[in-house]
Length: 175
Picture 1 (tube, rainbow, N blue to C red):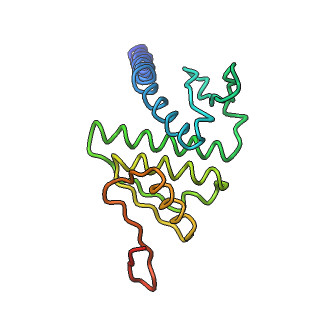
Picture 2 (tube, rainbow, N blue to C red; picture 1 turned 30 degrees about the vertical axis):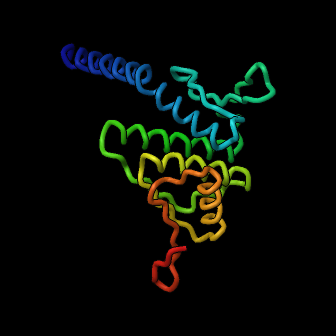
Picture 3 (cartoon, helix red, strand yellow; picture 1 turned 90 degrees about the vertical axis):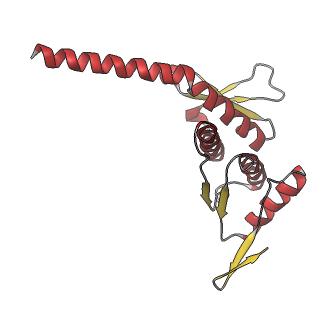
């Protein structure tokens, strides 16, 4: 009866309070970091902002637009949505590693849905995340390995221990 109803009401209130606290204290840091990864991926063309509450995320178009036009989630291209998703994953993984044990990032054919420009930016963002996390990237595309190697060399500061290998008839060979 009444006791069960009160328990449900109190539990719902506690959950809402915890969710609001999480969004207020933790989400802005995740969004901020993801925005940095997104800016790196897009050559500072885009960044992320949290609209707060149930309104979700906005991508802000930087560059020549002085009004910093918001691009709401529903209007994102599939390529931009993939970049936002990747930037959020990288941000969450690096944040987790700072408060706990760093997580290895295992990525498989990460660049297949990206066009040529997006591939280079994604490689740069993953290389940046690899400074704090172990990253294992698997691909059947030789071009993907070349993009990552070129991006690491261009930055002039590949993560320590960066290694590129390929498998030939079951044998791991340094590339």
